Length: 251
Length: 328
Image (tube, rainbow over all chains, first blue to last red; front, top):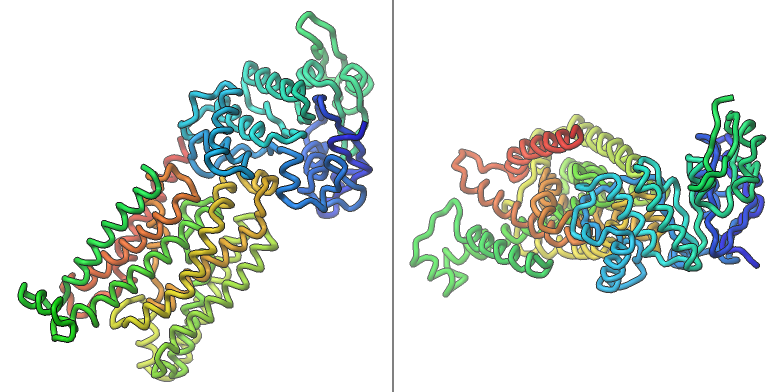
């Protein structure tokens, strides 16, 4: 089956530093792919390079088979929804208007109706009129997630969607993204919590120094060897009734 | 409040202010003279109202609207509530254009100073648009604007410095202080064309300004043609600012203050704030010009002096409030 998102040996530089080196990846609909790696490993660069936000020096990225670089903004927006790491809002817009930003292809009344529906889906229906700067971090995360869902794109890419959230909000965020995958979307998230990645992702991609060094089912990708070599951890994933848990200490 | 109702209400207030501004002035009139002015526009009181005051009020309203809209556009584009039309450096270069025309003795040709100021604005605008298309980060645009502003200011000072005649120097200084004194209907019409084009561009950029609320990357991944909308916003703001400077000299703080007067009424929305900011700017300048005429001073106060006199403390207050919200 062809991928919703395919990266074919993509390489990118930032100044003289190579931030992405010959990375290849295929994401298909219905799966949740977790991208993990130490700080500065190139997780965000992998997303940005694959979405056309970072110019590639070689290789090619495709969305539903079409080269990213050749897509016009509206065509690209139909194929992918992106939640950047940057969570700041410049203005105190009500939540319904923030969520409606995900549906800029629709007329304002249509976008507003969709935005309210998406807010309800993420459990923030009662926040519709609240200013986004007057919210707690967890509430704002839900609103931004509603904006992502409002794109209705077949590929949803979220850069650190659970950073700074409490455990409940982290699980809720990933549950909602899993529900989107169950509905047929392809979901890609970068995560720092390896246990959480192992429990919630169908597939884990390990990035280190701009390269993809391991990829596969969580247990396979996050083997003791990878944990030691990439993260400097001594330990491994342990099966518990609540799912996989990371038991490790600094090597 | 819906946008249409808000704008309708503001138009009403603006109309009342404009009527007051035409009715009141340095030359006090009595009731019978008002009746005479309305019945016979060619009568002496009619001359005062329709030939002297009305065009002046119209130019003040147009300039205020242009600055208010340009300010709101720049604040949206740069995602910064402290941005104003001068931030791009367009007004400084436009002022330079006027200074060159005055020192070259072109003041005798009607419209020459205005045209020279507009050319300065267009040159600066073209430069800023090119830079905006190349660099997306608001910080980059602000820094280039600071550089352009300083350079324009330095060249104006140079023109001043090398100017052989003290009369030209006084004229440049008076012009730089900003005023709508002695404007006629032709001045209002001349300003209208570039302002209408600039306003059209800014209003078309509205969706893009709103999309920028969540930052550059989110906007770039949206369905909107952000690169084009950014150029619309910068070109529109530059045209509006240039046309305003050409019509009335350099008038500060209106572009900064006008959006803040209406921001809460449109729930912070950078798109819906555009029209109300234009109306608020027009209202501010009509009132400021009336104040400039009514405050009893030996020499009539310059409009730019009045707006800066009231605007600068307002700016300080804004900075104070902004700083407090950062701390919390």
